[in-house]
Amino acid sequence: MIFNYEDNSYQVIIEKKRTNKNTYIRVKKDMKIYVTTNYFTRDKDIEKLLIDNYSSIVKMIKQQVVKQKSNEGFNYLGKKYDIVYVDYCDISFGDAKVFLNKNLDIDKWYKKQAKVLFKNRLDEIYNEYTENIPYPDLRIRKMTTRWGVCNTRLKVVTLNLELIKRDIKYLDYVIVHELSHLIEANHSSKFWSLVEKNYKDYKKIRKEMKDF
Image 1 (tube, one colour):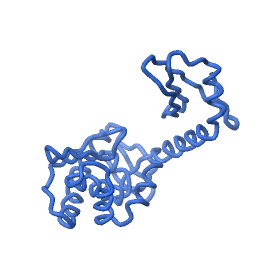
Image 2 (cartoon, helix red, strand yellow; image 1 turned 135 degrees about the horizontal axis):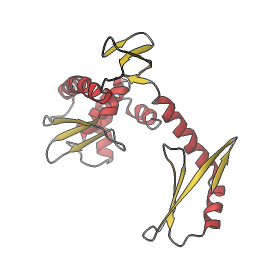
Image 3 (cartoon, helix red, strand yellow; image 1 turned 180 degrees about the vertical axis):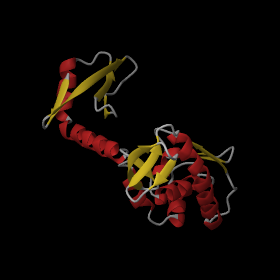
Image 4 (cartoon, helix red, strand yellow; image 1 turned 90 degrees about the vertical axis):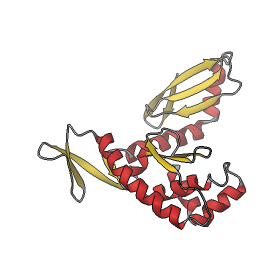
């Protein structure tokens, strides 16, 4: 099955599951459209669903294109660099270019930078936080669906390594968000009041992060 938009054709992958009561449409990184539905849903019903949701699917395609473009090149602290591979150093930054050794483990380099930066930002935001909260342990790892996680029982805040690629304002917001969970474990109105108290522009930042 094919979905056509402008001059491009996108493959539609149908995943039928007996346990699914509803039908979901997603556009993934491979730019294919995935339809997850009930085992008994007919193909002609899926075709109608694609037609009925044409504008929503186009929006998802555009969002995926924006995400992929934002991840091209070398991103560090909100700035994008063109990559030039060299053999005389591990990494060196110019105004618009980054000179990389092709043998450099980029993820390891990112994590080394993140360990220092994330800890410094956590310390500063913790010291300025308006409420009295326990100081959490910090962990850093790659995550695909979350920017941060707070284990309220163990008092552990985990931050997504990908934040090292973004402007520091996003890192600060995620830290405030997770620290606020040490007081309010859910996303109640009290929780968002705490976030706003410690990060005035959080709504603007959240909106921007949805495009990543």
